[in-house]
Length: 325
Ligand code: AMP
Ligand code: MG
Image (cartoon, rainbow, N blue to C red; front, side, top):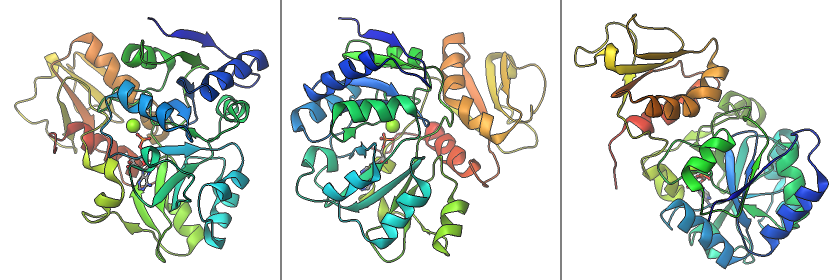
């Protein structure tokens, strides 16, 4: 069965559609919806049966926990132990692309946490997402609305291409703003740990905390299971370009290029962005576009590590890596 797709005005979403979508979530069914980062595949985060449907629709490994999305920071206290530092960060950064990992309260289903003792929480900065979560009246578990391992969807077309059939309703409110997923920060220990770079620049988090979060290493891969998997990848191979001559085994005539500075002429397709922010906003749609155009290889520029560049590097690295598991 094809998923129903409904178009909403981002700034003024039709309340009757939002109410219906909220009811679908409450009934334990799935709704794909926009956030400021990427489109999410939402389910009632307190209903284990509904959460299981997310894993099924995405083909997501069940040991990869989900983020619970809230429409009010006060709701965090009924799901997690919120200390002073966590409360201050919610105050400073929510709504926004920052996910906080905190000690979970027993009410959070093991399907959400993948059996961990922690839960990941975020309040998205998108009027449609916030009104939907409010209408559902529950925390909304929502990973990106793509088949597991594929590029994240930054518009409703990408959601339909990957998940049509696996979802009850797709809310289309146009392209997203940020284009890469949220920054995931573990606050369960004294020193904050950056589990995944994302839409909230780590420089802003460091300035707030007065210290740079610890970088996630091999050990913290256990704490953030999602980082173990290959991700964000188109079906054609992705090659990283770090400047200089193109590798001789890349033929521009059959390849696509995505980045900020074109290495040479003659690419079959090229998407050249004018800023790192636009690069982030357009990279996943660029992957999908080039895949559809039939290029044999996608060359992606390795950006500087500042600001959104750190998240871009992470996504590019994962998209170009061989599968680890
Ligand atoms: P996604 O929703 O697909 O963008 O992925 C969510 C990310 O958050 C994945 O990398 C998860 O492993 C991570 N995550 C979710 N919950 C937790 C948690 N309780 N502890 C650590 N990482 C988490
Ligand atoms: Mg994802």
